[in-house]
Image (cartoon, rainbow, N blue to C red; front, side, top):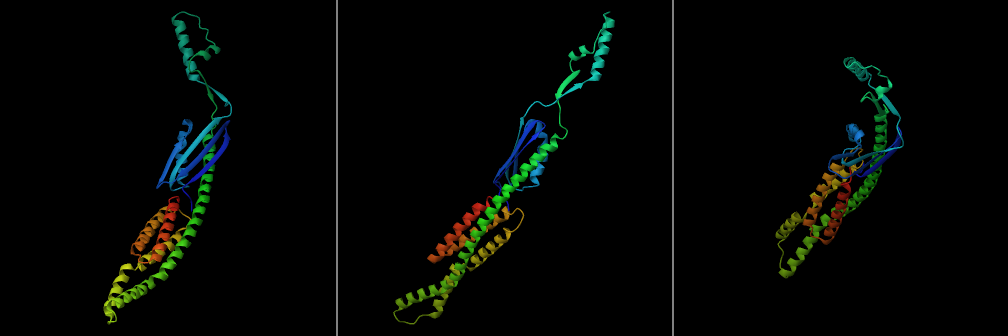
Length: 289
């Protein structure tokens, strides 16, 4: 399990430059990648994007790549020989037409435009090295998400145990409600009839109607099933955030129904605690990839 919140950083020297890569992320329903790269590195964006997609599936991810020059790069002198020959031919031709002495020297060619060009030496393996630095930052980023994910897993497992305690109470309490209601109703009828005979059939009918109205057996069973399903999902090694988010919606729906049917203060109290626990889990699930 991984959190959608994470940070990774890698820094290395390359061709006289200090290259720093930072990756950070926050929650998002989908994978949202954004980049801040120097102009000279923007051609690598697609490769970096694919590297990230191979490691993460959800989150709003920002990638920063910065370069600091540590000194002058080695210079390289480029000579345009074809252009130099063309200059020579044209100058020689012009000299003959104007009856001027032809005394062109090699040194003078240096001053003609585009014959000589001074540029910085480029490292042929520059892109490979940069991508290695990016990969190091990604691995650190993934590790941070995994560490946070394990904390979330532990917290959710603890809350699910809490939910099991609430459900155990509700399961034990549910059958007692019918008996309690029947006793209360019988007592009221006896008091109102003042010793006259009670219509048992009518009494049992009223109890049955009440039991059907307040019964939460189905909701408790479904909620219990969701808890066990969630416990199983937490053990999976893939991205489970969307599945957990769906389960949270279902668990919240069942808890609302239980509260709406509650006719007992103890059930109301436990139902509210269960709903509060579900809400806390829902907030945590929003952070899971």
